[in-house]
Length: 324
Ligand code: PBG
Image 1 (cartoon, protein in one colour):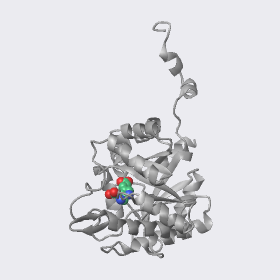
Image 2 (cartoon, helix red, strand yellow):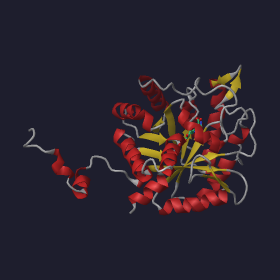
Image 3 (cartoon, helix red, strand yellow):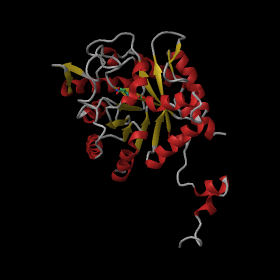
Image 4 (spheres, helix red, strand yellow):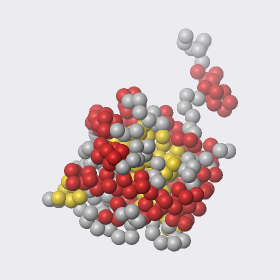
């Protein structure tokens, strides 16, 4: 049936009809809110390039988690800023490291919050790379044992899900094995499967104090032109035992997200990263775009492309709108 018999505008005539026929709906249930925790007491520092996002000590983090829960957000992703960094990133797998302490404290009073921990060495290494350096590059196989050990300490502290973001080959398999051997077969793995070497991580690296001190991450993170390779990466992670697979960043990689959704049955997560957040915030502040509308449009686009879960610094702002 064609015009004039068929008129698509009939179903756009008001917001009630539009909602009736909406193909995609955002839900607070799908949001994961990333948070940064640092050592000390009663400190809270706003990340310069990320208005509304803070690095904070455990006490303040727990206060914010209360607010997060009230908004209906059920999951957080934790990043740690250690008190000292070294070549091996040893605070990353210290039982009393910042993340391990934070998870224990959170879980004491917040059993209902799903705590996801970032498993990666770059926040903990003095050189800022995501693994052990050998001959000027990150050594894949040396790094694996460290990641497995780090994951175990997160599980022991009470993490529900560990999220390896390092992009080493084979890490999901060794992490699964380590968790299972130690009785943590119910701790899930959300793998950053298709994580691109992206300039959109800039603000995060300021927040986590983790820029690489030499070179870049292109020998381990994915090359932006590739999408078939993303499918291979995701397939490997699923074979190795990933429960949730992720595409990151989100908005510039919606085609990758769509391809992943079509190819696999596993839950697919999308990470709307720091740079995506900062751009919207900055343009909004300048009055160049309507921040709220653009934020909601980016989120619904990510969902429409195929994301089941959305990691976003906008989680609280978007939840406030969805709860209205
Ligand atoms: C750690 C890690 C990064 C991000 C998440 N985990 C930074 C990086 O790989 O350089 C980026 C998150 C963001 O930009 O919001 N490897």
